[in-house]
Amino acid sequence: MLRLLSIRNFVVVESLDLELGSGFSVLTGETGAGKSILLDALGLLLGDRFELRQLKPGAERAELAAAFEVDGHDGVRAWLAEQDLAADDGSLLLRRTLDAQGRSRAWINGRPATLAQLKDVGERLVDLHGQHAHQSLVAADVQRSLVDAFGGFTALCRETAAAWHAWRAAAERRDAAAQAALAFAAERELLDARRRELATLGISADEWAALSRAQSRLAHAASLLDAATAGEDALSEGDEALTGRLSALIAKLETAAVHDPALAAIVALLEPARIQIDEAARTLRAYRQKLDLDPSELARVEERLAAIHDVARKHRVRPEALPGLLAETEARLAALAESADADALAKRANEAEARCRRLAGELSAKREFAAHELEVRVTEAMQHLAMAGGRLEIALEPLAAPGSHGAEQVEFRVASHPKQPLGPLAKVASGGELSRIALAIQVAASEIGEVPTLVFDEVDAGIGGAVAATVGRLLQSLGARRQVLCVTHLPQVAAFADTHFGVTKRGGAAAVRAEVEALAGGNRIEELARMLAGSAITAKTRAHARELLEQHRRAG
Image (tube, rainbow, N blue to C red; front, side, top):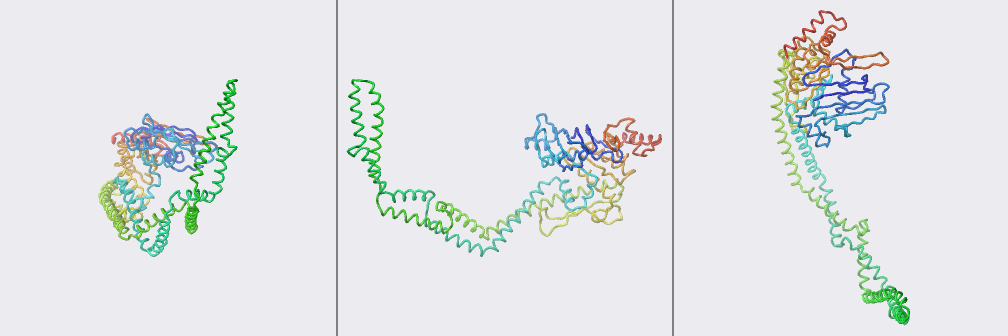
C-alpha cells in the first residue's frame, strides 16, 4: 500500500509530505485548494506524461516520490525481481524529477527507470479513478475490458488476440500464394535454371583463390625456373658458388686459430651461415625439380578460370561469391516450394483458425459467467444509489466470425428505474446516473482485484444526501479490504473515512501554496461543518457535523 507521498515544487505545492495508513482516507478542502494536485503528482509517479505547466512558477525543478509497502503482494515483488529493481528490505520507492527545460527522469528503488516501467509497476500498485473516468465507460472497448478485468482473464484475452493475428497472417499467406502462383512459377523457372548452372559449375568456397594462385605460378613457370637455377648455381653449383668459397674461408681460419684462439669465435659465427646457405641451395634444387612446365595444365587452369568468370559476370557477382549465390538460390527455391504448397498453407490456416476459435470459445464462456456476476453486483449497488428498481445488463452479441477481442461484442445496457426499458448506457443514463453507475462498477470490480491501493478523485460528484452516505459506506467497506484514498466535497462521504486530511491554500496571488494536515477531533468537526455550510459555520452546523461522525462510528 501507499505509505508516503512526497512533493516538492509541483503546481502550487512548495513542500508536502503525506503519510498514509490502511483503510479509507479522504482529502477535503475548498475548491482550488490543491486536492486533485496530489493525485496528479501520484499519477506522474505512476507513468503519466509531465506538462511544463505543472512545475511550480519560479522553480527550476519539481521532485516527486512515493514509498509503498509491498510485503504480501507477490505480483509486485516478482515484477521488481524480474526487472532487477528489488530492494533488499522489500520496500518500493518511486521517484521522479521534472525540470524547467521539460526534462523528466525517473527511478525505482534508486535505479534509473523508464516511463513504461513506472506505468507497468503502477498498474500493479494503484487503481486510480479520475474525475471523468465515468465518461469513458460508454466506449465499447472500455466495457469489454471491464468485464475481462473483473473476470480476471486478461491473459486469455491476449492469447486470443495473438491467435487471431496468427490466423489472419496464415490466411493472408494462403491467399497471397494463390494470387501469385503464376509469378512464382516464372521466378521458380529462372531460379531453377540458375541453380542447375551453378551446380554444374560446381565451384567450391576457396577454388577461385586456389586457381588464381596456380595460374600465376604456371604462367610464370619459365622465369621461376630460371630464377631457381641461377640461385642454385650461385649458392652451390657454379665455379664461384658461395658454399665452396665460404667452406674454404672457414678452413683457412680454423688453421690460423691454432696460433690465435680468438679466431675460433669468428669461425663459430660463420659456420651457421654456411649451413643455412647449403640448406637454401638444397631447397632451391627441390623447388626446381618440382616446378611444373606443363602447358596443358596451364591451359586447363585458365579454361576453368574463364568459365567461372563468365558465370560470375552473368549473375553480376564476384567469382568467389558464386557458392553463396547457389546457397541463396536453393533457399529461395525451397521457400517458393513451401509457399506454392497450397495444401500445406491451407492446413496451417485451418489449424490457426481452429486454435483461434477454441480460445475465443473459452473466452466467451468466461465472459458469460463474469458478465452475469458483474450484472448482479452492480444492480445490487444501484438500489442504494438513487436508482431503486434499476438494473444493469451486459449483453454479449455474437460476431459473425471471431475478432482480435473474441467472438462477441460487449455492450452495457441499463435501466435507471423499473419502468424504463433497457438501453445502451451511452444513450439512456444521465450524467449523474452514469457517474453513480461508474462508481458501482468500480466498487464491484475493485472487490475482487489484486491492486492494493484504490484512488477515487471526486467520482461522487453530482450526488448528495442519503445517496452520498451510501457512497461513503461503500468506500468505507471497501477500505476494510484495500487501501482507499478519495478526494471529495461531500461531508456525508468524508464522515465515513478512517483518516481525514484537510487541504488548504495559503498566501496571496503572488505566492500561493497548498498544505495538507491530518484532521482529528475538533479540527475534523470544523472541516465537516465547513463542507456542510460553507463559510457561515454555526453551532447548529457543528452539531450536525458531530452527528455525522457519530453516525460513522455506529456504522463502523
